[in-house]
Image (tube, rainbow, N blue to C red; front, top):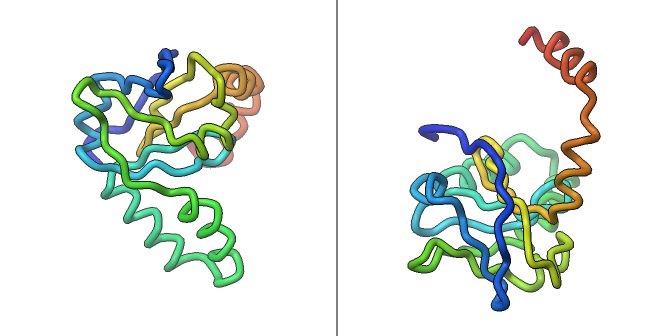
Amino acid sequence: MAEPFVGNKVHKIDAKGRISIPANMRDQLGQEFIASRGVGKCLALYPMEEWVKFINDIHEKVNQKDRKKLEFFFLANAEKMSLDGQGRLLLNENLRNQVELRDRTEAVVFGSHNKIEIWNCELFYAQLNSIDTQEVIDILDVHGL
């Protein structure tokens, strides 16, 4: 991957269930990408190369019992998608329901390293605000960062 996805911004969800992906993220995402359920009640958009790597890693590094759980969680909810000519994504109704975006008019588009995550605003900010600075310092120390 060339550069990580970074930042977050609130975007409108229109009446047809479409949300704009920020222009600075579109090229990296690619023409076709995978949308799936993400960890933590979000929708995850993976550039095709990152999706293939992720799925291959699951098959190579995870035991069969746990692999099946991950397949149900990620693959059963995955769909190949593309943006429309205006850089909008039509949000799948099934996924919208799973990540608490049904009947929402806004969502957070979050650049999360190798993928883009789309979050219910309240859930995103609750998660963001729950992180304690000392906990971050401790994690960095444990990993020598």
